[in-house]
Length: 421
Image (cartoon, rainbow, N blue to C red; front, side, top):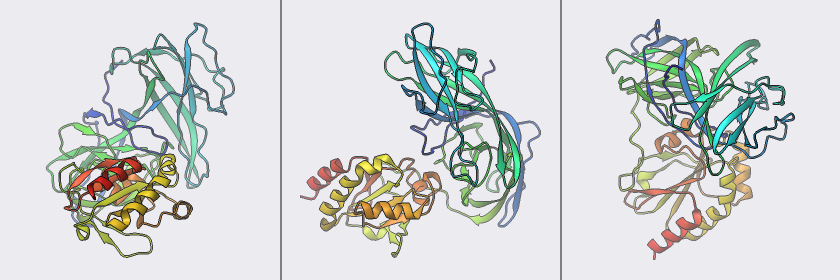
């Protein structure tokens, strides 16, 4: 099989881990560069479907099949069967996500030997033939198979044919549940001209919502090879990622999406004017990135105005199971340290304000909390602090120095209590 480049995944509520991958880019023939972009200029991009190997997500197999999976093949060699899924995101206007493509993989002595995938989305693996499986160059023991998925999605009153080729990369697992990665083999690719840089830069579109369409929904966006070295870290928190749903900055200029073909063939961006590039990610012992937090129903709060106090910046969401487990510990943390001058500030990754407020009321969370209605890579503070996960607490010292990231509020309470003696 041809050696192909690989991209890294986005974060969704389904993702258990992120796997940024370095990409070696080659120029897509016939891609059209956008024009230069002075303020309010419009850049028109035409994209082509090319081999891309967009690495979407890394997960761990389940020991049991999904409840709605009916027919299941039985192994004939005495191996162990593990279960995974290729998800499909909710289509625009749909209250529920359509059924994904469940798959099962038989492992023998820690090595994948056979696989089946519900390519027809009927919930039955027993009527699908075994998949052709082969080696994968990512590791000596890694195996992989390809799945062709076809369906029709509805978008603004018309039907859009979706054509996916998914590569499932299977890890070696002599002990415990194995991991797998999902790659979209084909992607929409082109080039863009940026005013602060000479020449053009590679760009590709990213279907982070997994619905087969490119829209202004949460997760979808574009990646740009900003430094022009032909290698790209496809991380939604990276400076080269631009979400379609909100304005974004690239190489010192802010842009917004004007129009977007749901099949990804055409994209129009409008340049909005100069924009500061994001600072480096927070580093322990370095000055913490300054921010202004706009809490619901209160005045803005600036980090610079809180010098002399410990600051805890808590990224969370009401739909996050870890945040539910942390809720009582966070309440104890605030009750114990708030009177001692520690300032706790929340950043919600909720998209439903009512759900956020209901969670806060149910768990007695009264500290100031911002709400942008966006997930991590689209929330301004989430991007500033490069925080992909909900349930993370960033600790900033009285001198404005970044002191670290925590997930256990009780541990943080113990450490801060010792500092404040």
